Length: 381
Image (cartoon, rainbow, N blue to C red; front, side, top):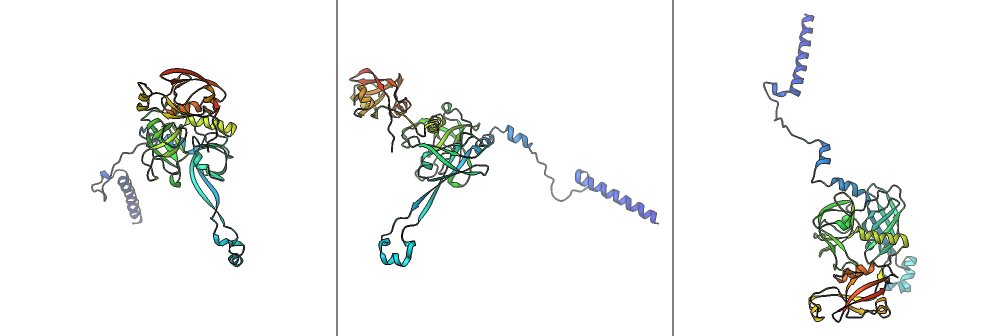
């Protein structure tokens, strides 16, 4: 009897094991179906997602984000004094705490781009111009105090230096080859929410006469740029730096799809001067200029509106010493034609002070070549 019971128990155990295997691996072989439908799905291999998706900019973001820092600035200010501070009775009652106003600190934020592994960071002048303390926070969690090396208000650029090791510097791209319609990424810290990446296209290049800076040659983009993004990176789809985000066009303070970035080839020239000398030196002619219009051209007896009208000449300035007069129309500098006043301003600023250059003007319907010794542009307040 015991033997029969042992055989029965072993047989039942084997049958249960077979049933478990079949119900798990091949439930369709059973005469009945378990509760619920069996859903068959198709899933891509994880490696294929990251390497073959043409609509993803994850690789570019992965390259760019570590090189963009959050910038926190603070400044100590004093509360406005009260007329009651001069009351002897109140001063006696409240004691020393009533003697003077208590200072407090205000803070603001922005973004910056690590451009050198030894600590140089490029940002906007307006991000750090009023600060007496600057702190940067990296994407990897590190923080450090930053020193202002120098800034240039006329292009709204500034250079910081931070003493941290193994900094991930961003690779400079070719901003002069950027075209309208190119896809770009904006990386920064909008509204202080944390590191963010937005995507858009280039809407225009060499955008000037915006009224933001003295020297303007912006890349215009519809990638969302908001407060806090200032000084952050504008990159191409390979994660290379092509611009420094600097401003938005907005009536409300929020992004309306028109943002402006300083091309990195311009920022690089300014940055190198600041690092070497602490400031920026530009060429100067000592004239005030005005855009030529068709009406002005007709009044001067010209067929087309070309060049820039010299509206005024500073006495004893480089142009005055060279013989340039108010009313002249400057049409070329070193054989490079002048299309607008903003373009002429950039051309003259790029000249080396002390060099002698040839300019072409129209005076009395006649073209005239004049040699001018370039001066140093005065510092602008």
